[in-house]
Image (tube, rainbow, N blue to C red; front, side, top):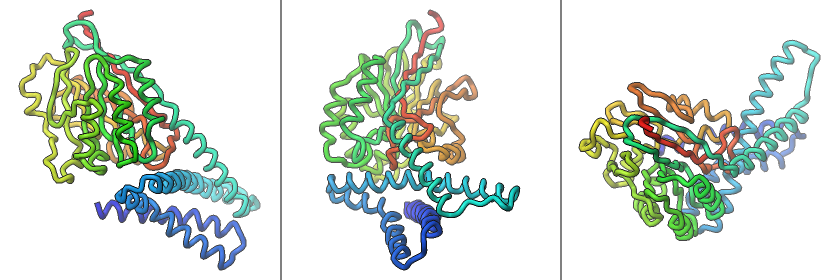
Length: 368
């Protein structure tokens, strides 16, 4: 964890150096500007740690304010650096082709800054437009009829996303009317100041065949015991290396590997839970991270975690890490993997070309 935190702060600090160097080159140099940029760079680089500290003190109002400022800035800075690097490359190529072509530093800074602002604004709006993604699967393993499953993932309820966001998500669920609701991790993210109200909102919605959930990494970061209590009080059956029957199918779930750092034994192996089921059972495996275990029997794995990258072009980095893209993928042996983009946001309250989703999966019998 310490290595990850150090690397993240180093990268975040380097992004500030790049951006503030652009500011320095765009405006007349002065000691006052230098001091201001230095102080701003230090404070903003370490602001996520301030959010963490304030949350641990249960100062919810201050935590929310600092989180909105810090994470909104983080999203804007990421876009500024990406656009700036692309602009630098284009400028270098243009200069090679036409040595007389020139654009001064101040003009370049304004163009990059405005483009980043426009894209951040669009991403802020896109993050609030939850889409319904629908997939259909036909299988001979379902004796007759069909069953529908709504998948929610990566809602990150807590400090920045609360009542209004959850109300919109539940309204979508009421529209599509699934038989089963499954939550594939990172539903709760931090303490927030009104988790009881969020529990009541979840309690107000119960599909006919029940609600099931697994843990994600952020449930563990927020405190596994508190997160499990939240999910269970919200009406979810939490599957931790366990399985259940519903609607003629088998639902199985495992903990996220980060549960191993929580002080409790992580339940990552589903082989015992699935040992009593027959080969002709249709098994839906709930696993937060889109990692496929070839030794675990399943027909459909539902995952999340990668947010579709959340802010383009971060999707390229998530693909390098997991070799998985969002959407439905065919696997060996007729198995399938569906990776959700998730409904919420982590960190920056922005989604760029990765709109939030709730997934409706229809599993129908091949027998008609």
